[in-house]
Length: 478
Image 1: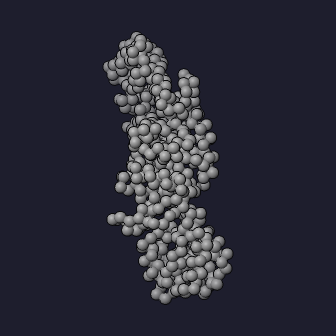
Image 2: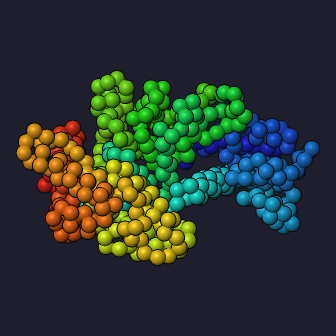
Image 3: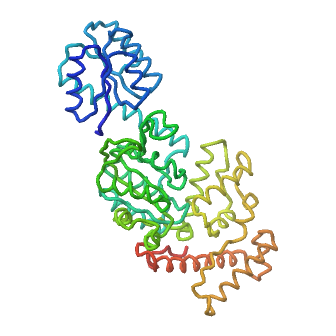
């Protein structure tokens, strides 16, 4: 268990010293106060993990202090001590919110057990509050979904890296589900009973990023009116997911390296060292090796993070997973808001499968949500509900064969199909007729052209990224 701050409140100096020795022997920090007013001043200045208070004191009782703690920090547990133990006072203290009640004189071993139990409860409360905020903000946790060879390769790598203790780097385009890969690793690791705490380094303002990660003490900077626990401490015992690690500033990179090397940190403005036990999983859409060569990313931090690597494939590389993803997203939309479309026509599904999705799964989800809202409650999602940009195929033009006949022919086919669909306002039947093809023939040609582009892109990626799947590991034609 991490080092905790424990506040002992009692007017008996000898008891305060005794409890202070016991608290320090358990590896925690002891704070003391002689009355309610002094204790309240301490609670205003800094964060406390547990309060142990006498019931009867001059200038206010332990029950008065309990009210103060519940008002200022409802997650902080309170243990009440008294030499006047009656059933009535015990019941009253517990009803008001005390987590435990102990008679004086007490046995040292019994007090140790009560302290550790109360700290475990405090961490449980903190983690539950965090998880509720995560669910409110992001919805229920999703699993990786798919049957393609590309996604099956990810499943295999997750199974391999999850049981280890080392850092993991997840690479991949924006929207490919890198956080889902991180959650899959965490849930299959020995740390699954503790939190996975995600931090998007690109979304937090630079001036706030260090305090977000490492926390701060009261007075560390203007506006720091109280202590704050950083994400590293919150993830103690669990996993910290650092998304967009390539956007970290040099200062943050330096501090991250120290935590990874020493398993310790200092809150902003604090001289005290705090030990943390955290596994770091990082993700980026950037080429970190190129960032290192360009002097924008620390080489020593890169090698610390790059011990094990998982590449999240783009949706273009796993187009056969689109029907499964569409079904899952529609079910979730229906459950989250109101009765929504839970059915989709075959033609609409074919169009979604043929789109290149430069924004990957995230773009697919946003497109379906807009289509469902446009459709209204219930009903079936048809071609007419889809946006214009999806109706016209967006072929990725990888110019691997730009100077040979095959490459030039492919580019010409793409432009002819785009023009035909534009003239037909996205109607594939009319577009196919104008091209002298059947509707099914047009669909097959679109799928072939999309696969050719994805294959060329995969070869280009493999040349830069040795962890990318080889051509023989790519999905077969449906």
